[in-house]
Image (cartoon, rainbow, N blue to C red; front, top):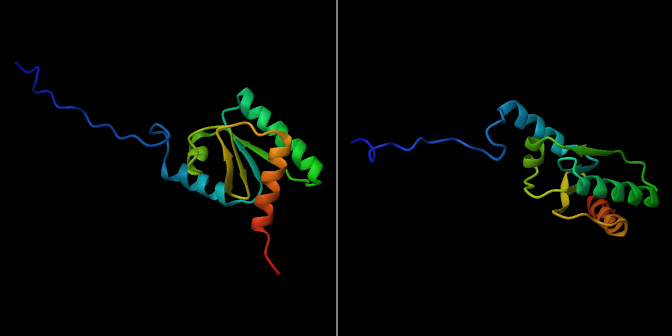
Length: 120
């Protein structure tokens, strides 16, 4: 009887379910290093609400910064984010797992940009 002698098949898995390649990971790492504002998420209602709040916050701050909405899971995983929506400012994850209001987004963006500015 070979019932109990079955070997378990080993499966390789990674954060994106095995669909990543060295090339896609290299592209994700390169995109991660670029400055700017990004909303990470699948494009659901919460992700869109975060993007709208960030857009309003940037307008009030007088920043003419484009917002990239990243929906590719390999790129999201490159940031180490497992809970969306997430907000990335100049390559640094500043919020994840919740929708920020406009005022919260303003505060977070100001703090992130102030920390990135060179001191004189």
